Image (cartoon, rainbow, N blue to C red; front, side, top):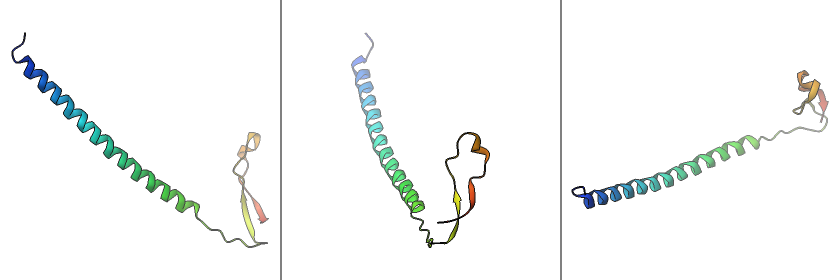
Amino acid sequence: MLPNSNNTSDDLLQRVQQITGRMKDDIKETQIKIDIAQRKQKERHDRKLSVDYNFKIGQLVLKYENKIEGKKKLEERYQSMARD
């Protein structure tokens, strides 16, 4: 039997508790940072969505075609002026 084996196991147990306690604190801190980052990202996203285009009836606008599939994928995405 090793000398001070009881003391060594106590030290080991104490060290494990110290590490796991630190991990719990780190996990809480990380979750807080994630929540803050997600909130900021949502605010930026919402700001971009809130663009208000004040088109009037009969006004000429460029029409953008986002969904171009198949053989048409090399064609222009903007179509000529269209009345909206």
